[in-house]
Image (cartoon, rainbow over all chains, first blue to last red):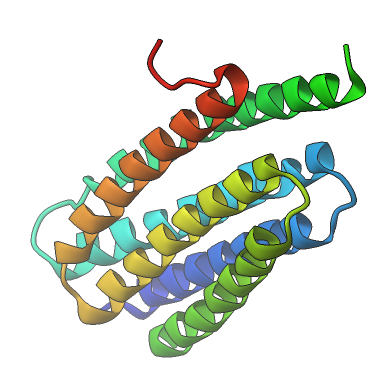
Length: 102
Length: 89
């Protein structure tokens, strides 16, 4: 494999893993649910996006032809993450209000 | 260089999944546990992608896609259940 492409793929994998770890640290360390929602929905999604991009680049250069089907995972994750975050925030608000007796 | 990056990626994602497991077991409210499960699914997708790059086979990719879809559907169903007390009304 071309060393420049290998460097780019390695960098994307490292950056992606670092962002995924950052999101999980945020999930573990932040004080309440609505702040905890930030970590996984933004940092982890970006991290996995970078890794999927690295995989796409790797298979485009090692196998014959472009390898674009990884992009499907990327697009699906980027669409579904805000939707699930919104639903979780709504559920948490609902439970909090019920606990307060309103 | 690529091997080093992949091994480091495995370690970092493993650490991330351990933190998610801690939040899943501890997590004061049910919404925290759902969020931890969702994040674990996304990290599992990352692990599968890494396995695919290391093995040089695109067979792992289908598993990653199915995990993405099922994780999203599961999260939405659980959140809906907390919200309405029912999944399909």
